[in-house]
Image 1 (cartoon, rainbow, N blue to C red):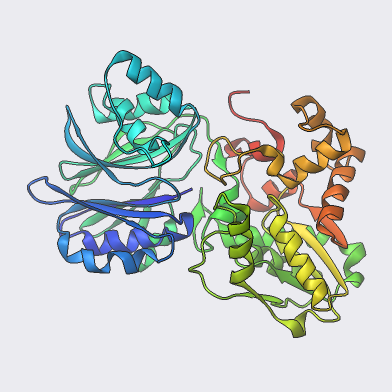
Image 2 (cartoon, rainbow, N blue to C red):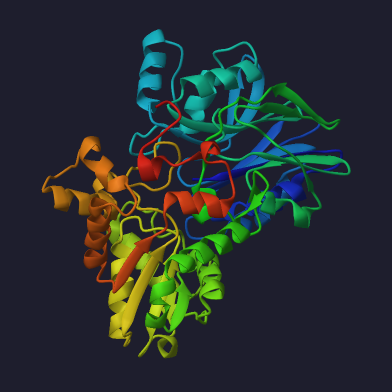
Length: 477
């Protein structure tokens, strides 16, 4: 997906920018970049490949080359950024967290009008979404009007930072699908996606931007340029998976929400607790759900798998399935004594494709497990995400639950009409779908958290979160 950090300071901003950006490393695996504006409004920028190395190690040697009072940094799963754009507004740098489903249509429209070319395409010809966003911004008479226009034209999502003339413009997606938070300390203001980036740098949360809200951050303060809209659809997965344990969104901490979610799942299993010996979490994001489950169930929490190093990339991100499986296998090391002869219940944040979980279950039985129960912290994923780069799946049939539906319906690709009956929690069709996934993954039992109980565990108004990947419902519908 990606994450960004921006800062404007009375003094040199580079140290805060470096560490603030690094605190978003869990959100991206491919590119890291920083841009700093000096006292003469010249922008210095560096972008590095972080596929096989941490952000900090790549930028240590560059820090002495930066200097200035304002800067932006970004961790990206795909495209090179931040970009430096020469425009009628002057030169500026831009970083985005976005997904543009209609990117080719927007580019074709620009070509037809003869107004642009694109220079940041990948070797495979894919357009750089940040460059396309900049193209849209440049069509209006100001940065603020340009951001509003870009967000209105993009099918998907767009949160953005723009560095120009010693200021940083921060804008949250028009439906608030990704968070943008403003922090402050004496002499500095910062914009970030993760509140985790604030405490160790001395920042306190000043304001969480609302959907579509735009602010300009200067050395004198934070100026609102666009009031927030009324419709919020923040991605629920920030509490389920994406968010760092110490981060908060809409005032709700991720770690605490995951504890409550695990407790809720344990309450549903009261009649089955005698069938398990221990509770385990799939590292890292399944751990808090499992701790909550363990505490509520009165069953010991055990680490039957340990994660060797956080430097391994997210195992669902590479397109090649063999690479995904290798990464998943290499980063988790089994603890044989906690597996052999045990009836284990695992909590995981979600079941996406299921291929890695199937391999994990095989390994558990090879190591002597007597039973493997699985609890997913969220409902079955049935629809591919249209709003964030959750994964690079080429087809919705990559989703384990959707494959199970296709098998039950005896079709290659189930229609939306076919799918509806499987979305009703604990309906006969839902139960059959879950059992289909269970059998494919060779699990003793499998349960998914219900959407209603997940949202209750988070503690947020259900109208304020996006649930598209589970029920296909969106703000436009």
